[in-house]
Image (tube, one colour):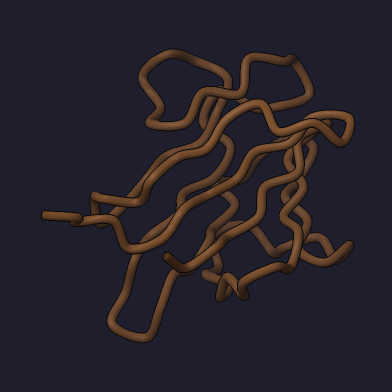
Length: 102
């Protein structure tokens, strides 16, 4: 049985480096190993952002990161949820994340 509720495609310098199936209700993103999605490059904060799956769809929240989280080129306000739209890039440090429903 497939329990995935979409995927996050992670790219670095235009190349896909990781694909994450969304199977849990939340996914933390950051530089340290206790995150669900580890992006181990210093511009990424230790606990940078959180992706949550809600009844209205997936949302992303910047956790007060130093360098910010950008959706479609616009910096998110820290600690405020923002809807993820399929195909719209999310930038965290040098990484570009794209949500894709499956």
